[in-house]
Image 1 (spheres, rainbow, N blue to C red):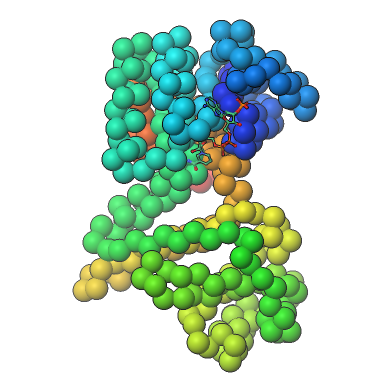
Image 2 (spheres, rainbow, N blue to C red):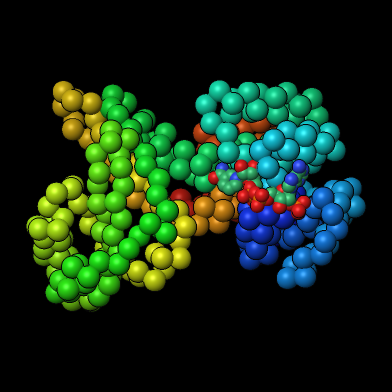
Length: 297
Ligand SMILES: NC(=O)c1ccc[n+]([C@@H]2O[C@H](COP(=O)([O-])OP(=O)(O)OC[C@H]3O[C@@H](n4cnc5c(N)ncnc54)[C@H](OP(=O)(O)O)[C@@H]3O)[C@@H](O)[C@H]2O)c1
């Protein structure tokens, strides 16, 4: 199978994660890095150039430059008929305007492009949209937090079955304070018993407390971003459905993962700009599509 040759444009936080992701992917090869200056990236065995024309055979370019530089870079690549994936942090009207302009240029040059394919916009947007699809009459709350606001809690670490614990307080969109307590448990711990003990501890009675068992508190401390996304059916809806996503991740790492998945889909797309909502989920798996269907459906 021929490897997909990927160029990374801009070697900042996201560009580094994309380059690492490409190198680790057996179906991809790093064609090179395009930077403003030729500063070498010795940790990467790939050419570093200041112009994409200096790279051999590029099947797709991952755009990792600041949002205000994205449009210019994208247009230049599409003119050269190089398919692109971008994920500038744009939402709402600003996102639609950029998508529409990229669509126009991509159609003109008959090339596919995937837009808004990062973490948010991107992977998290897919969850948000699916939750709303499944609970059409309802309310969505999203809150972001950083792991740096997490603190150790001796009160919880004293509870039988708890190895280590971290807590954080988050203000929901409605203004109410919620406390999240992450616990790493002993193998034989009684999860429900630990949760009950935490929620009923006098220290935690004043705020709504949610308990999340995690495999490793050390790993949690290394992540830099957390999100809680909740969709609840509107009052009076008979279903009372609710969906909750609690996630912790390295933001640039997650965005890079989504960009790589989008890059796999490009060969199956028609010319024009496609958002992650336009893509059938199967195309994001590329060659692994059937295996994914077997495992995840
Ligand atoms: N959707 C998401 O979830 C998500 C997540 C993370 C990032 N992003 C987006 O990804 C992009 C990059 O983010 P980042 O955190 O990696 O930023 P960053 O660390 O500041 O890196 C951006 C890189 O772009 C290059 N650059 C800087 N100014 C430029 C200019 N005027 N023209 C062309 N290139 C320029 C530089 O690389 P060189 O020195 O190599 O030229 C710089 O290191 C942004 O558009 C951001 O919104 C989206």
